[in-house]
Length: 248
Ligand code: PEP
Image (cartoon, rainbow, N blue to C red; front, side, top):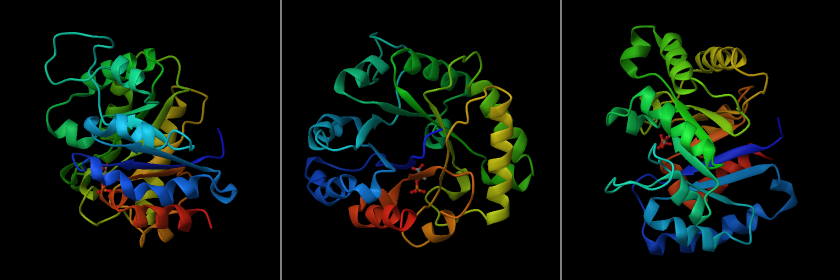
């Protein structure tokens, strides 16, 4: 496993063409030796991917898609984007299994098909898993994570291009983050489940209400190789602060 620390900016369904003007400071930061470990990856809405790729092309910042279809090339699927299309635009990554898509009906089986197609097109996968509040209250977090990992990664042989993002659903967009011991236990469980599938130590990232204040606590959790940041990544200053406070 490399020494990289991942900073994932998930813009969800936000942003227009004028939103990119704020990125210059971040592009400059990404070029500094001090932050060479920071692997910054932007996931703008599909409509802005092309603009983003042009904007960051002379920096080390990468760009990815927030989702893709399970058909890897082309097909009659109105409104969908395939792994081939993302690759063609210059994307290196795709987020799959995000809870907002799971809530909208995406199943573990759908996610498994998408992961296989995206890997086939040489995209790297940010594979999101995490329990809902009800599942946490019912104390079934570990069995939920097990199911998501075992179904989502079923039949996968090459794990080199997969990163795991542990995102408790109850933490996304709520301002609430897990307690340190809970996070340690869940990360350890994920690590154990993954180790049954591959010898490769996949990077495990944390996502859920990460901001420029709580990052000081989160960065000390061992076993976390980076952060998936939603709303705070849309404010470039906050996102820069998150990176600076993590790597100081
Ligand atoms: C997310 O988009 O996955 C996320 C973690 O969002 P937020 O940081 O806003 O909770």
